[in-house]
View (cartoon, rainbow, N blue to C red):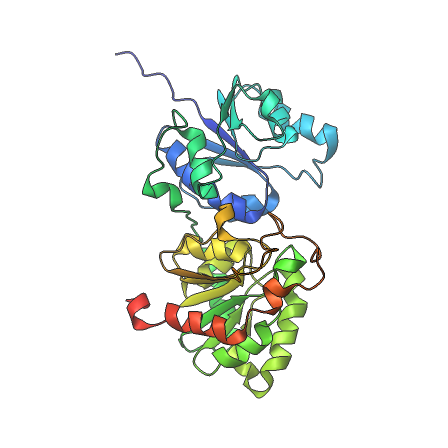
Length: 348
């Protein structure tokens, strides 16, 4: 009996921000139904995709470290040479497209608006009216006219036992006894996307819940400000900033009744594990396609400001100097949204 030919593996190139990597998981799940899927991503992306059942092999590409520049690009491309038929360019730079060419992929699929589109063999319409998870899923669709199914809006992550063990140790050290936890994520890579009132919000939340602060090492200073503002109630705050890897942070968020954060990666971590979210929007808006996807979520933003939105990512500084999109969002408004997200009707 003749042996069936092996199904060729798909190559997905996603070397953008951590949130983008998380939003790529519906595409990975779709491709995995057809055959093996390998992913080229950053070291941070490689860590967040660890244990993901849709991914066969993760190729860590440190484009700003030991694989930077043309030499690093060439070495990575040669490593991948002639192993794939189709590359899906979830990150649309010319560098990513060149990597697919160097890898010898005869088919290269990406968005028609991407910088690397001149090297694509098939361009997919970029749909500004769709969530980015759906846009990425459409890279695997047979045509632009396909309607994305519900699963295209379902990011997923799979923390391992090492991640849950790290969370257990952190909570035990904080004297956690199983109380209801609300997480806050005060950071963002973009300064104008950081709502300034998390210390005051934490004081209000501590009247009902224990609070866990999540984020990376860059957020440790903001966590210190929150702890100082908590005063005598600071024992109710669990500072996880810089203490957990992103996938372990997802494991912690899974134990929380809600997350309050900015338009940044933690809301996507929460969406991927099904934790209700309250997202504070300033210079950006959910309509850009990067809004929360948790089954239960709420967003806050000042719709009456003519200057908003002012940037797709969030500028370094407010172009008009007043930063009202964040300064005018009150603590009470956000606390009320948290109360709504954690009410029995939402949690049941």
